Length: 182
Image (cartoon, rainbow, N blue to C red; front, side, top):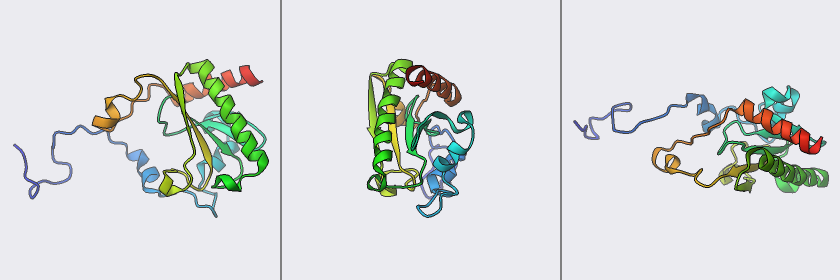
């Protein structure tokens, strides 16, 4: 029996299957996101203060570090962040800009050696309106890609299957980074 829109209520059966992810509500709503002025809530500022396993950190440099994305687009989705809480590319120092580029290239080589992707997406979203989830802290995305990894799930079901556990992926990539770059 189909309910007409005047009689239907949220949660009524409608033929769609849903994967509920309430843990993402704060992330999606912007609640608890850092501002440019206040870095105390910034996950990219907090990550280097803990241990690498807990922070999903793969490698550390002088001005930047590489870590796994907590909400990955694909398995092995790496972010390169500055230690300094700064939001825009033009505000980086020359040293930060250089190391971010070097760490991005190294992350691609590590991902290639460890996971054998067929391609990569690289990108920086500058500002919330440009799609930056954490707009107050600059970060470079390195997303490994394989033929067929963009299947019907995101289009039809609005579901993304990520067939890897973040901790195991962090261990694999950190080990390969150490092997390649000491």
